[in-house]
Length: 302
Image (cartoon, rainbow, N blue to C red; front, side, top):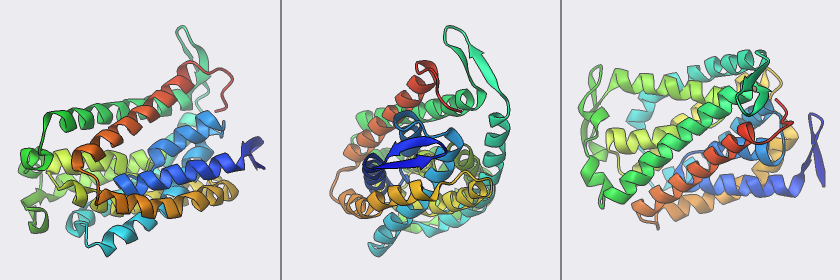
């Protein structure tokens, strides 16, 4: 059972299985799963990078919607901070998509000891590895050194300082968060979404937890709203450029939507430290996969 994706034969059952994994991660960590999906499509199935990014964002819309409904049914999430993040999360993906297109037209780069590689893969996968690797080390370190992560971090440095008037978050136990700083964070997350296809959650959730000091259960549900917004905006932007493969997206969604529900339910039963360490391990896996792809694998498609 094979699926043709721009001239690449992709094994359909494998795609469904990857979709189920991504859906479970989305529900468990509130990160959409895009940080695993993009390298999985590129490294395991050799899908062209721009198609992997665009189709990955399309899947993030489905998984994040499913997980968000489950979390909202449980009364979790801080909508006030979501409102500050939404404008940037909606506008940023277009800038990221344009940057990805410019990189795709830049030709090849010759890496010392490695040889020529498409510039778009070097830039995107290198950024991907740095972002995921740095976040993974931060999350793992905090999970190891803090027995009570929430108590040690509240309020976080971004909640205590920053630009603009402060918005109180009594439901999260915070006196306030700076509005201008939070809005700019949303814009940066939107750009990363359009460029890397990772949604916003994988970067936003550590910011909410370690930067603002939100409870980990609230972090997961809160991060899903701007994640959904940035993924939807990024999907539209990439689809207008022909970077979304509907057959591939449907196969991924078939495995992801149900798995996202189980992941959301598991969030309530696992301790915060276990969630943090599992999230860090998955981010390191994604970072290692893209580094191997750009440095060790030859003949990769752009």
